[in-house]
Every structure is written in C-alpha cells, then in structure tokens.
Image (cartoon, rainbow, N blue to C red; front, side):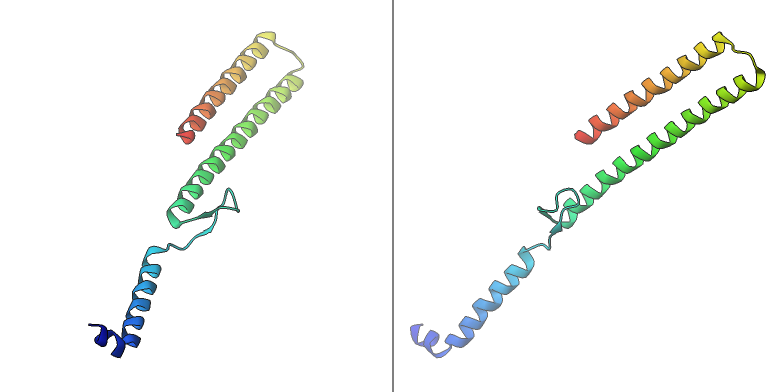
Length: 120
C-alpha cells in the first residue's frame, strides 16, 4: 500500500485537492452586504426576508402619506365651504373633529398591529 502511494502520490494529491475544492464550492453560499446593516453579510434567503420587510415598511408609509393627504383635502374642503358660505356651524365642526379623531385612532391601531406583526 505504501509503495502504491509512493508511486502515485501526484494522483492522490490531485484527488484530495479536487475533493476539497468540490466541498468548498458546494458548502459555501455566496453572501452580499445586508440591506439593513451593510457590515453584515447575508445569503440569498436572508436578503429576500430583508427585502420583504423593507417593502412592507415602504407600503405602510405610503399608505400613511395617502391618509394624511386625504385628511388635508378634507380640511381644505371644510375651510372652503365655510369661507364660501360665510357662516360657521359649530355642529359641523364637532362632527368633522370627531371624524378626524376616529380616522386617527384607526390609523394608530392599524399601525401598531402591523408593527406587532412585523416584529414576530
């Protein structure tokens, strides 16, 4: 056996190197810098999870911007109607403020629920 290894040491060494290279190629996943922490390297699956999380955060913030724009439009419409009519109706103001309070509390509750779900 030893004589066989002495005569074919180059083939044995080549076989060992080939096995190590194949194991290295199969076992090591490519990694890239994280979207959330550039100092940390992540694999494809981790990068997809980070991307999905950031996409949900983006969609939530766009929804919040749209809600704020709708609220501003309602306030401006109310101001224009009041200025145009020349009269001020306190009951209308109370109703409008109650509606804004309801919208605000619903948005806060929804935001807290989304954050809680994303934290899981």
